[in-house]
Image 1 (cartoon, rainbow, N blue to C red):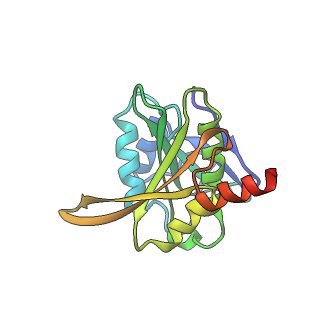
Image 2: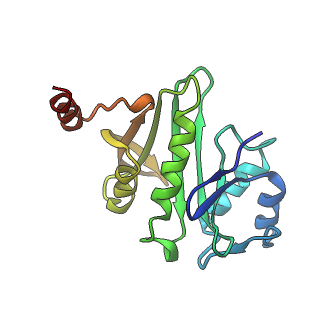
Image 3: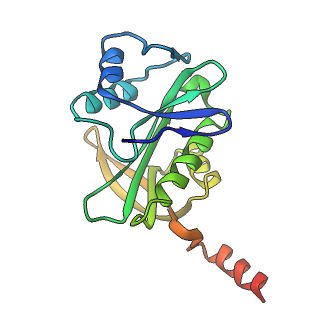
Length: 185
């Protein structure tokens, strides 16, 4: 069973088929509300994936729910391929809720949960090069830039940046590693 994750202001609640079906049918899951702008088109795509899956994966997807009003703000999750030690994280928060730190808070909590799992040594996330706000979210959540790649989205070539966070406090960032070595002396 997938565990719920609590933060100071948020609850990350696993999305089950029943709730996903309700959203796709235009209904609100019992006891919850929708933040303005929810569900997004991306949210509906996530729900389509959930209704086709037998149950949530080990690390979601989760609804990102604001505790103060029980409003769904978006989704977050991490998938790990069989025989892999790396999780691929993704998240979305509806635009009216941007700029309040919700994505950073949710990503920090998810990363802590994922990287505390035995056998998982690394979590990565990607965004388009020009998505500065998403890059800041990853950096504030403790992830570090580790490369770029080109992919195709909607038939067009897209430049992506890749961020990572390693389990056990290991840090590949050369500046941070140098600072740590200096402090250890």
